[in-house]
Length: 98
Image (cartoon, rainbow, N blue to C red; front, side):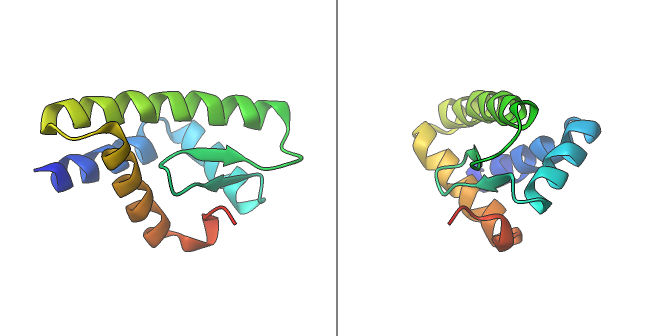
């Protein structure tokens, strides 16, 4: 059940806002943003203010979704976040933070 919920979460995070997803993908491709192993994004050094703001907004949304899934499945928020990170990074390892 948790695996299915995480898959749905990942899809929701990716497609929730097509414009934001396009901006995020561009920021990742330009090396301004990377995926951390804790389930959250990081704006890299030199990222513009709007990129940093976008990362903050997306991370807040991710945390809220992680919390919902964790509560629903009686697991910790950290477990959900790390499992999601693993799936996202496995899907696109080039965007993993170094």
